[in-house]
Length: 208
Image (tube, rainbow, N blue to C red; front, top):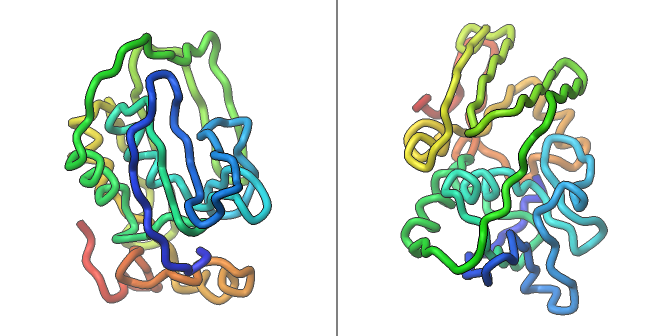
């Protein structure tokens, strides 16, 4: 969205530390943990923290971290937003796997949901139910010939995430471009890093 170059580095975290974001270009800024309490409601992106030291559009990075089941990590960036790369979580997952993942001493902390919860945001509905493992059930419905109504169910493990979910790319529509750019968004977006659709089909790229 911001359109600024960024170098992102994954660094080992100490046991029990959790996931921390750190700005290398603002040394005095304290690290921001990837916690719900630090999330800020924003349009079309996930943001952690506020003001100049905030981190924007971190969803693909965090998806890769969660998909690889990494508990302790420092994510260092020299700008406010991670590189978009190809518009998916896969390049981040590839980097984490290449760096190597090791076990550390100490217990893993889990969130156990005790009752079902439901959130409605515009036309989107999210439900979470108690379970012993992560299973995702998703339905989308867009009035477009290549999308329409689609449904998928995924038992999320490191292997299934790498094969089925990590390659999924951001998508958007040509008719949204001007309005989003008028709001200061998608400044770095292109058909190289997003699936863009016009009225008939995909523009200047191929679907995976």
